[in-house]
Length: 270
Image 1 (cartoon, rainbow, N blue to C red):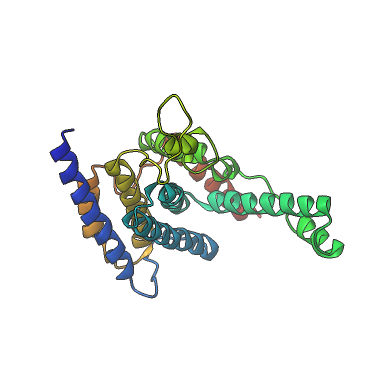
Image 2: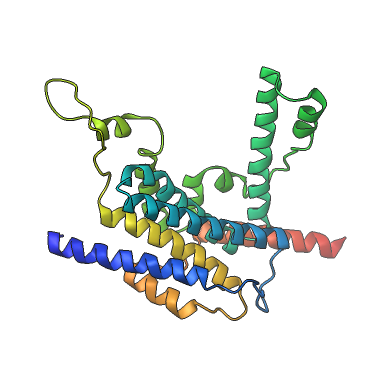
């Protein structure tokens, strides 16, 4: 891509991100779930909560980048992508997705409780209660909920590309050589920059912010009976040249629906 073409693409993506944030701000205060869509209230809350946070992360990343802190914004870009895709995953999967999501949180609580016991933090009874109330009931949604790579694998063929971007951004999120390299000045002696080099291309991380927000917003919009922003989000998907609603891989679709059918057959025979 030529410098001129990239500059035009960056300008287009900046405008698109501004529009996505305006669309989210324009959402109705209450979501009226459409007819024919059956969703447990906890799963509804998870989708909307994740979608909301994706937009907050994107807005914060944009503020940092405008302040010249692009490297510092990369963890927020990564988070926007993760929250947007996870919102889509929760939307398109059935109860097992919610079970996997809850189990992941319970495993974290249990691990925290055990760590607190190990260092003597907190009252013994309170910490013990945290551990005892973090029982995990295994479900087929556990692996994707715990491992973002497997969650990405549930979307085909989009997921593998999104995981590559996620891994690239992880290099600028954790303490590692990518962070150190951004501050090093090439040469025979060790010299450190005051301001780090910018990671990735501007178009790449802007596109990622836009995609994460679009998938988050689309997940929330699909829950609404009136689909208030369907046309605008479809148009934005064309600008981003990516699906507005990622398709589930056939294995993921069958896994989810197969579990549902088993659950229904058990309940009907009871």
